[in-house]
Amino acid sequence: MAGVLVLALIAGGCAQSAAQQAAHEGVPARQPEALAIPGAPEGPAHLGGNWSVEWCDRSQPELDCGFFNVTLVQHGDRLCGDYGGALVAQRQVDEGDIVGSVVGNTAVLAVESGRNGMIALVRAELQGGALHWREVDNIRQGGADTAVIATDDRLTPAHSARTTLPRRCGGDAAAQGEG
Image 1 (cartoon, helix red, strand yellow):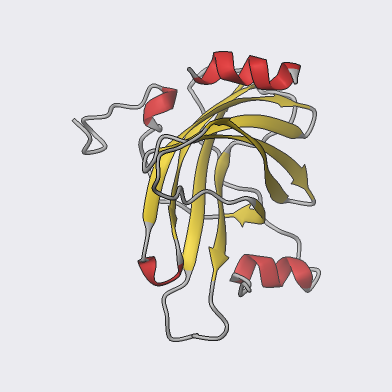
Image 2: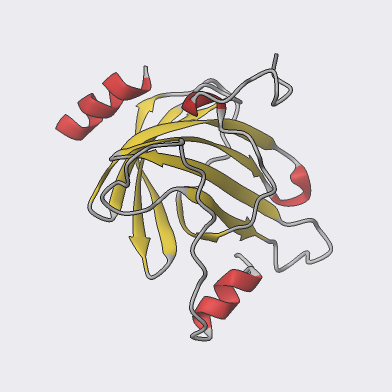
């Protein structure tokens, strides 16, 4: 319960992706590309980078798969970042901000939906090159609309052509088209 208080203060049927298939077949997963604040010291475990999971409807394979993509920036034992997500067939999309802390190989995160304002309490644990992402509670209930945030998934390292830091990490909102 103390963890919820700390985060509250800080926050104010699937198909496998190629990376998941490779991991399942025993091919070592590559580490995510690091997005780091220049001059920042290394933290306990490196969870920074780009992570993703894909959700597909096996009964309707013609539909576009949904996804949940996360960008985390680590500065010591603190994390900040953002996410983007979409349900299968892109019928609902969401994006939002992330803040949290790392202890050992586990992060405790506050994930805020831009769609409905919900703040989810998430435990993300580095396990064999993947990030086990599990929503454990709600810090703040959202509006009537549904947030698109992974609830219990295995996120794998993902490539990103992103060149700017997320807004919550001091990124320039105007350079990201938000200002």
